[in-house]
Amino acid sequence: MELSVRVTKSFGEFTLDAGFTVSGSRIGIFGESGSGKSTLVNMVAGLARPDGGEISLDGETLFSAGRRVNVPPERRRIALVFQHPHLFPHLPVRANLLYGWKRCAAANRQVRLDDIVDVLKIGHLLERGVNNLSGGEKQRIVLGRALLSNPRLLLMDEPLSALDDTLRFQIIPYLRGACEAFAIPYLFISHSLLEMRLMTDRVVVYERGRQAGETTPDELARLRMGTSPVGYINLLRLTDPLPRGNLFSYAWGGSRLVLSTPPNGGENLFELSSKDMILFKKHPEAISARNLLRCTVTGMFEAGRKVGVELACAGGRLVAEVAGDAARELELGEGSEVYAAIKASAFRRLG
Amino acid sequence: MPSFTPADIDAIRLSARVALAATLVSLPFGVAVAYVMSYLSFRGKTFVEALLNLPLTLPPVVIGYLLLLLLGKKGWLGGMLDAAGIRIIFTWYAAALASAVVGFPLLVRSIRIAMESIDEPLVQASRTLGARWYDTLLTVILPLSLRGVVAGSSLMFGRSLGEFGATIIVAGNIPGVTQTMPLAIYDYASSPGGEQAALTLCLVSAGLSLVVLFFHEYLGRRMGRRD
Image 1: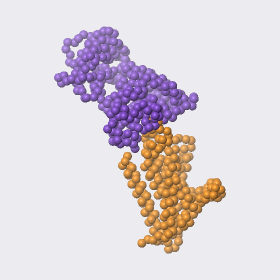
Image 2 (image 1 turned 60 degrees about the horizontal axis):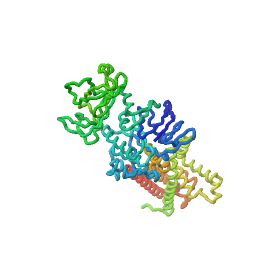
Image 3 (image 1 turned 90 degrees about the vertical axis):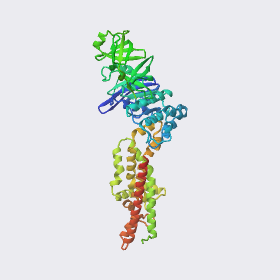
Image 4 (image 1 turned 180 degrees about the horizontal axis):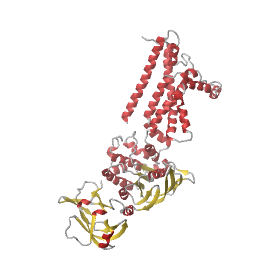
């Protein structure tokens, strides 16, 4: 998928000035609320008319002020998932799911109802009305409805903001998995850095109606480490939980980590802040932290007054942060060996 | 025991027929106008808005007179219709037309309120899922504003049952032809000894209105439950 957007639109004082070309299948648009992300989405979908400029998708012009082209939304084949699950209240789940499918040209019908039902696990909901579904169920049906319209591009405008934290991380695997399973590229719009990192490969950053840059989600997270109150968030997928005393041991790559959080049956995705790691130059003989990892420094980066330290450990890569002075005292540099200490309680479960 | 003359029965029947015709004929126009006013923006919308609501505040007599000017033999439309051999003035068609014009704002208003209360993203979702505007109108907007359509129709039907001022001018008061219930009551009330008959028809009129209003409430509740 290649999407090229070069548009302007003003409302009163606010002017949205977007100009980017992105290609890939998992693209993010990142920005605070009020930065014009939703307007941008509406213009790409054909629901709002730009004041000027051009929008094209895979070489096809969808809007061009100069050439007087404005393809109506129903012919763009761009589906939309909003923040709130807007299901048709007068139709049962099945009819909601098939709404777009019925209107899709037979030649384009790659995704079928049975496939969607399997991937989203919604078989038991098909004959129900939509008004008594839970928030997570509704969002899954909305996603299924959008995918069944067999779009060229799926726009997700803050699709997780209305859900609580637990539900949010339960829905993410569905969002990602379903789009991957049916090879439907998406544009994921959010103000959450964490969601960006879980959902996208490339990120276009928006600030006050203007494009501030294009980067990878990980790069963005490093850039923001200095100003973020939570530091850099390391994301760890852990497997094979085993009880160990009154703690729990999980496999992480080729090593094991000790956590105080029990497994919950689902995906064991944990976050670990760069602030919750302590680096030692030599092996400390005894410490209270339950995890002591021997790592090699693979890179360092400046982030405000702090220094980010990229570590390669037996299990995978981690980013720790230390003060500038500390980095000098430890004589940190690429290739130096350090020990990272992490408390068992420092890992926080996502979802 | 109240008794009805054949003319009374005719008047009751005619009233029902006029009200039904006025409502049914207005319905598609009412939906179309409500859609245009809810979903399109165009130059002069405020003016159209005012024009649409004019029949609510204008005395019905004035509406009747304007219709008479328009549809009379020398009128702009009446002349053309006359040439085609169609006569409207002083027939029951004129009574239905008068009722339609007077009740139209009520119909449009109800449908519009219902259409405007539909979540915009539902309409947008339907469009991005491949529905053209008329497809969206038929499969999303209309089903979700059905309550307003029914409420508006029953209000308009009720209003048409009671139409007097415009009808008497444009359709006249011809027993058996254009004499609806309110006109018959007017006749009885203004002739000596007609009090009893006038009162009887008044009761029928009140009864019919109540039935319409109960029906209106009942449907409103039933649909409310379904939501």
